[in-house]
Image (tube, rainbow, N blue to C red; front, top):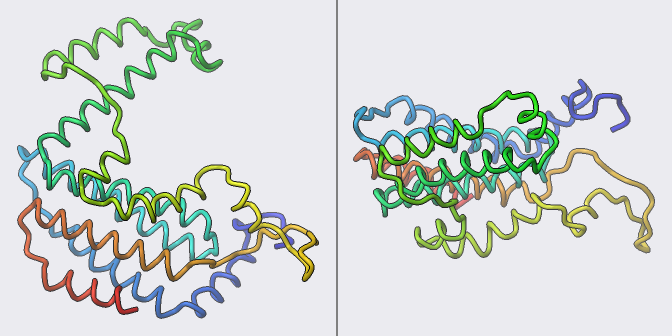
Length: 263
């Protein structure tokens, strides 16, 4: 891609069109599933006193936006980035499944996790573990002690006695998703972190294996596997949200899951 703007330039439109035409049936299935999920989203009705229903619905909104992001990234040929974003759907789905299987425990954990993040950040600011935090304390932008007391008061008011961080593996195992965790999630993690094996995708090699240059052109490696997987995950999200909100979408979901699994 010899242009000044890379994926932000107009030249990418030619690649987008080619990628779509080469994978038209797959993209059209994703678009159809997205339309089904969008309609489902706007049909949702949640009682304002139903904490589990509210947090589950909000989580589904995030997962659906993430699903659309994965599809869009593959339209541009950003395959590595699509796999990275796909990991987010897995993590969110496990939380959603736990909100159905272990509602009270999971809701409590989500609250504890939120306080954990806030208090942990305040501790970092107080101990000046970062130059930005040091700037905050030196310029009196934030009253760390005051904010800490507010959090402690809030925790006491709603009965929070401990704080802890959500553990992804724990969420997977508690929702009977061990296979997804060990075989899908582990593979997707390689794209998130710096992995020298993944960096070889940017090499241009000769027949004898020698490096002839670097290649950052659009790629659709694993497009079918990733888009079928992400479609399956968003449909599972519909299943569990339907169970939480007592919505009957069995026939619709069965239809789309069969199409995904027979693609």
